[in-house]
Length: 137
Image (cartoon, rainbow, N blue to C red; front, side):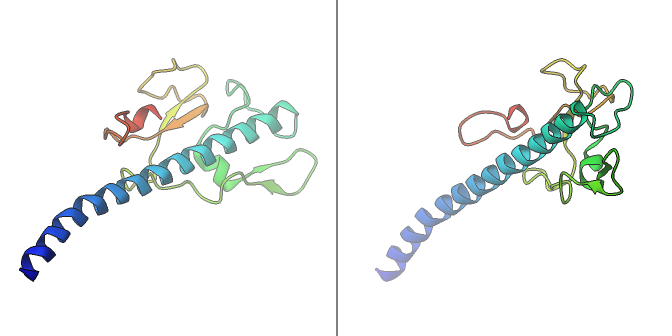
């Protein structure tokens, strides 16, 4: 009888643990996307103010996510401004690879034009607990 009760409790706990782990990875993905998008916005803000030297055709956005982590020189100063400590690892794919959109790309583009980094999204083809695709976040 005790074995049956333990088996029932284990059968209930396993799906709950999977659900909890997926929810934690989704929260981490949302945080990583927010951090990268805020870093892109901060970069753009400084470039609009003339604090960062802007390359032609980038519209004031960074040319890669690595620029945000490596840092860029601030005009008139000897220091670099870093916007990210590192490029985060996508919790859904386990890789530090992200889908990128440039300012010139269409909003639903699945390929990157390469001119700049205007937006970032997950390359995971999975579906979230709320039924949306991770790549659409």
